[in-house]
Image (cartoon, rainbow, N blue to C red; front, top):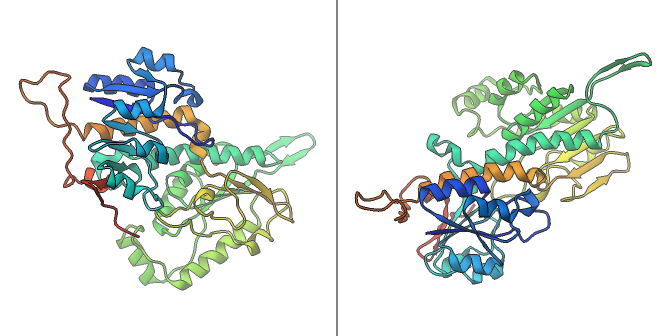
Length: 384
């Protein structure tokens, strides 16, 4: 059974779905691997490295698709590639399912498509397949470095003969995986860090990393609700949202660096920083909008562009930060895919050879069923 790897077809994507190390792991499982020539080049994985790991090299994506039962990708396949798919093939990648306009085509072709973003993150056995966490961790780290590069002053405090240099004030909005890594990285660089999140339960994590929690008063009833739900299922009151906005507005007015991380699967990113707040910020301050590719947390941000406001604030639309760390992000992503692919393998019979693989697609399985957006010629994705 052969697994195919095709090259990303957009200029802003440098990652590759399967790395040479992952090829070795797949070969040990009994798979063959074919990769489109040059697919790993932007991540510094030359064709020769894939060949040394045991993969075959194909001259085009069409050749890969023709040969493979399972096709792996970073983002959704281009329309031309989907046209070449046939009944029974499998596609695995970050397919942006709630925005994907090609799911009907996958279904019509009889393809089983797995969107890795839909992984149930509360399942312990699924943690090593969590592409969102692996990519967000790197993105949070790199976002701070991008900010440091844009900022015209240093992050740490310096004591010099000419005077004392104050540390940078960094505010992180959104304390998920990316936000926590951003806090840790900014602290390592010597900044003073504050953070905010709609989940009050994130406070302990922020403070454990040395950050200051931007506290928002809440009623006893709200506090109990937030605690009992673990924070994730808590719906804040209108007053709480308004109070939090006021706290954040004040913090941003004094900030040197702001990094926003909030994204909602299937929806536009929530607007966290409005024009009125931007107008209060200091000249030379920098905002890194990690959600620029899905609508933006910052008013006026533009994907993959850096713009300056009239009052001298720089807004960086960081639409695909993991691609900036293509070698490492590809390694982690490939490991996530290999771990998921192992769940698709049927148990071997007693008299089967080591390379006698067969697939076991089980939509009742809590992982496969959650990730499958098309199967049996139907679109399975629930609308949001």
